[in-house]
Length: 136
Image (cartoon, rainbow, N blue to C red; front, top):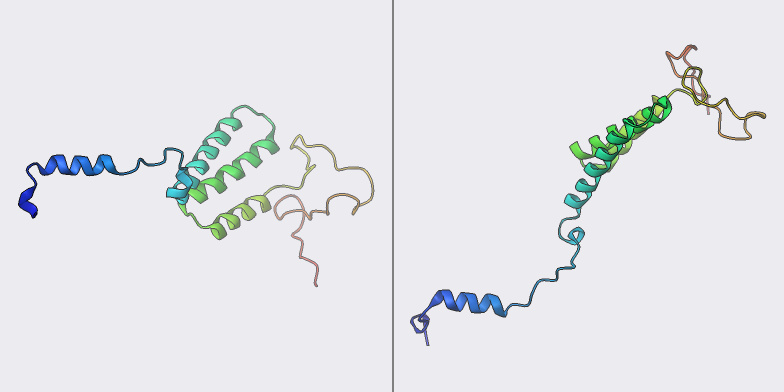
């Protein structure tokens, strides 16, 4: 038998394909291309957050949602964990202190400092002189 023994090569190829085991339909896409799947989920989250900003008038909530949207967009542009984390840190550092006047935030919790969240020094340009970090 040789290559000339096959009368209909198309029929042989079709028979070989039908003899292959079927692919598992339940195989999750994460196994096939995890980076692509992650990017699709990040994009969906970004779209959801953008829609959510349309339904709130709470300025601190809008600032928070916008920071998250910016961070997710950074992840979509440059899929690098360190760069995305840096973007998130920069976004959160730009937030005014909680309880700042004019942000419809609640006043700081009663009691002496140190009982709740750590004190946040005022940010430059937010009404106070720039604060230098304490020397360690």
